[in-house]
Image (tube, rainbow, N blue to C red; front, side):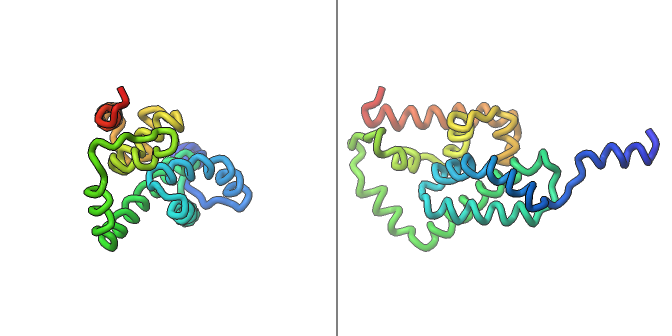
Length: 175
């Protein structure tokens, strides 16, 4: 392959900035699912809106190939959720401890109205894995790209997250 041909072939997936029209099309196709993902993983709709906005701002500043945009967006949102949680934990550690210790271990979860409390019992990564796999319908490769994991690890991590969720449900009387 000549140098000119290799440059031309590489040009098909060259990283480039999004035009306004490209961004609007990409945003309309990805924002609803991404916001749902962020809401469920972060557990807070207001925080989700902030993280959603910051994720798209960072996307606009990145020069990515079209194939890399969606995984980059989910990876960025996941990292922002983790950063937000860490900052929140530093500022409000007392609230989290009070919430955890003030709750009876025998209290039964009302799944219809309290999925947020159920999801709060597992880690952000576990929430992300479960949400992407079972709500978004992403396959293991897509989940790996979105969360910055190895594709071979996703199957094991999903299995562990499901087992943890099952144990929580069993503990609260849901067989």
